[in-house]
Length: 166
Image (cartoon, rainbow, N blue to C red):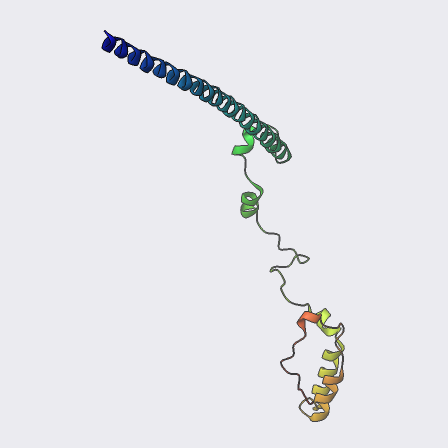
């Protein structure tokens, strides 16, 4: 009978040790559950804040786009016949050109002769040519000493033909 009592004592001790172990694990589990619940609540809170931030950014972006769209919006009256009408370009191609003496036949790209004749260098060159002195040293020195009517722009001055006598 003492062997059975000893066996019961050992079993009771094992059961008590197991119960203590379970209580310890239960306490640790409760701590872990509360920690995980707090983490989950923080995660949900962060997600809600991020969602609110994104919605605010999207609303601000939409507002900026609406302002931009308002600045470039087409302000033309509704006119379906306008689509079928001729354009100014197509009408001008069909219209006969105006060949009056006051209008030029071709567009001008250079200088008019009246502008060229106002230049003193041209007048002197014609006089030297008529006198037969255009190809002499004197004619060349006279032509090179006459200043142009307007000084050339600084970016138009070339250093290609300048001599460096230093």
